[in-house]
Length: 395
Image 1: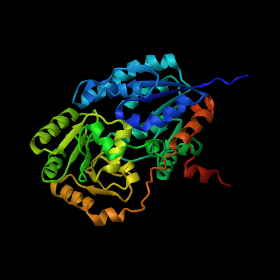
Image 2: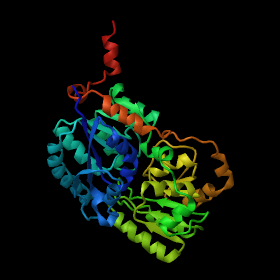
Image 3: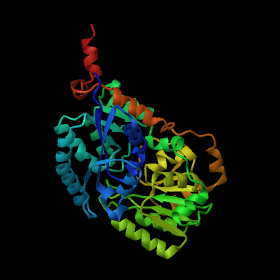
Image 4: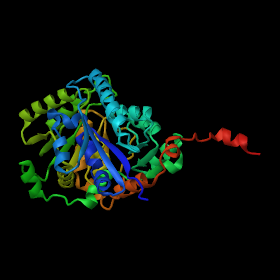
């Protein structure tokens, strides 16, 4: 008797998580044991943020459901309402699909919606990139909430695995897979410099600095650091390449401020969206990465790109030797950029390794998703005994 295929639903909400999910999605789509149901929502459907659903379609993935939920708002109230709109739509979608497992990744606030719906519908959740730390953003609380709502965990680092187990999750549920975004290094052919230039329509200089800066969502003023950032950049030499910020409270104001800066300075560009291959290829040729994005910590290490991490957003996240932390102060940022560009610092990074994995995460994720128990054995989690309880039971 032929075993029924596992129905695995995957949610993607933005360009950032799609680049991480690409290879897990590819392997799931190609596996005869799996019936993949891809749910695309949020910023993917927004022309303002690049309508990146078109990239997903171009990559050949069948889309099971498209969910419009991102409010055209620049406030925290808009973020909260986005969660509500997504929850209503996902209740119908997941209620109809009833997947065996729902796969989520990382820590975007809108992922609280599919997690809450799956919990109510008794759908087991698998979560990628839990156990990490970013104390300066609401992402930290979202990530930890998703961890406790999930039934299978795929961590990027060994420390993250230990942190999830310390949160009370059973060890058999937690797999250190590595960050799946790094699979692009092993599975994709990166673009040459001239290919990047042709694709972006810009000459890539040796001094190119890639900048990915997002609102600090845990701060009362999510853009409280921006003036110091732009003051520091005003006196910085070389080519600047900005990536669009996430769709968070303050993002539209930040985009407008960036465009004003571009008009004042020259020799810089802003791009609404990079596909994963272009982004990784650009990182490989960048002299420096600057901002407060997790990409500057998780991914730049694979190329030993000197990285200036600004402010509070990524505080506490495990990092490699290529990361220089700078408080959100003009002079501190300039000093960090100067150090990052120095020959001494660049040479000190020779032979460094990336703690976030080796580019083989997708295979590990596929193996667990296709072999783990289903039903009650997966859905019902057992509480881990406290040390005091264990001691009391000893004769």
